[in-house]
Length: 391
Ligand SMILES: Cc1ncc(COP(=O)(O)O)c(C=O)c1O
Image 1 (cartoon, rainbow, N blue to C red):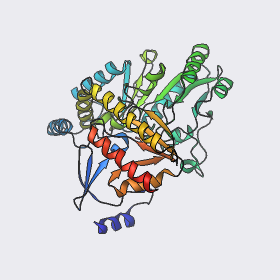
Image 2: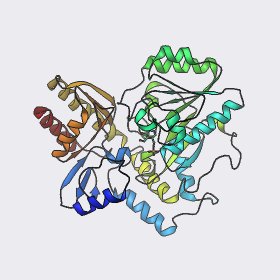
Image 3: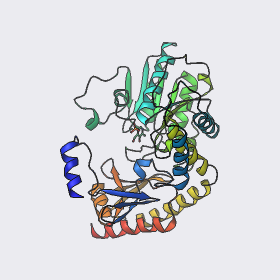
């Protein structure tokens, strides 16, 4: 096991802090290492494994598709891709879809759509919000203010203004006829699990009515029922024109999508957008099986287990008010804001074989798979109690 870890150090650019074990297999909410240890996974492959690891329904769908064909390109009509598109649009209540491979690619294509739409109307500006995370490509980084990911890599794209998150005054002051689009993560997945306020959402919709700009929702981490509704923005009554999805969309395989409202029905011409792998049939088969399993049958469980987790987190908060500042997030996308560096708690949980991670330095991020049960929530909460008693 250590030999492999050494090989990794020799071969890879060292940009990741990995958990110090080699994975042997993973099933449900558990990851097993090569020494036979099992770890409770409250990170779900960064919100990808929404049905847990190796769900039999997903594996069967992948096997079935793999025996038919693996890849053809978007020059062909493919049943699984078309049926999955139809299913997503029906649940999401959007009009058109463009499949990609990753979240960042979804944002890039949304940005292209915003520029195309805006240029036709002499609207040149784009607004995004601080502490958001949209991905690692140049377009995405241009929409972000994270120094660690950007500094020294300038120049970024022009005509983009980054405003403070959830700040109504600055929003009102910066919106005018020149704004083509606004990129919004209603709940900050990487930025500390803060959510927009209802007043911010209402103001945004009022301004949209007045100035007619596009709203692009980044639902890459928060979408697909993670917060209880299909999109996080549903909680605030926002109706974006464009939505980016990824993470769990491919049921564990790489898949992203950009969804468009009706005003984009006849907007694109052949060749305007394109991708080799986007919407590949294996990912679509896994994604279709995943969404089919979730909607509608798993929704009562998601709501039940979310409120069970919420109750347990509130108990923790009142017991450890000297360590916990506040609880954040929605549904199964939660954060515990701490009075100290959250990586300390991540390490203490890891000592108890619980996988979690920290976001925005002092927030412990909780992203369990949707199939998590009460006993697993209890195990996680017990782990935090043990850790906080010893910090
Ligand atoms: C909210 C959000 N947007 C965009 C991305 C980028 O997605 P990807 O890593 O698939 O490019 C992420 C990834 O963590 C994300 O959480």
